[in-house]
Image (tube, rainbow, N blue to C red; front, side, top):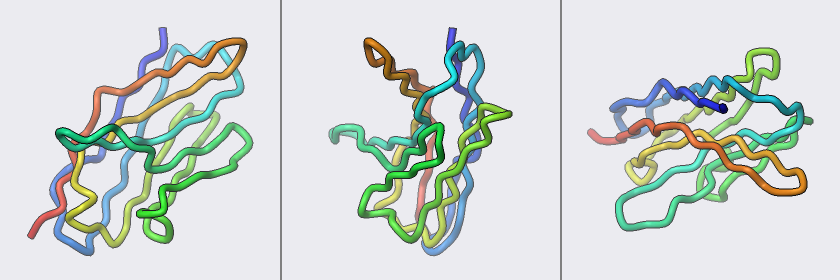
Amino acid sequence: QVQLVESGGGLVQPGGSLRLSCAASGIGFSIYTMGWYRQVPGIQRELVAAVSSGGSTNYADSVKGRFTISRDNSKKTVYLQMNSLKPEDTAVYYCNVRYSGTRTYDYWGQGTQVTVSS
């Protein structure tokens, strides 16, 4: 079964940087999208950034120019470099793997807390 293990969250001051990592295991398919979502209490989980197997990326407007998503297919790992962090970036960040075949399958990590505060 697919397992996603996240790391890299924590507390950072406004304007600071963090790098999230997510390592996937148990993946039995070759073409899949990896991404990061975030959620704050009472608000629907939202897409932050995603990267396809071919390297195409998609970002939420609120993070464009500040966050960079990348993946290492040989390690089945996705990264999120977050720069110029703002208090409104505070959330639990979830790693996602999406496989779209005849059906769409979503797999989630356990979440890692990112807190931006002085």
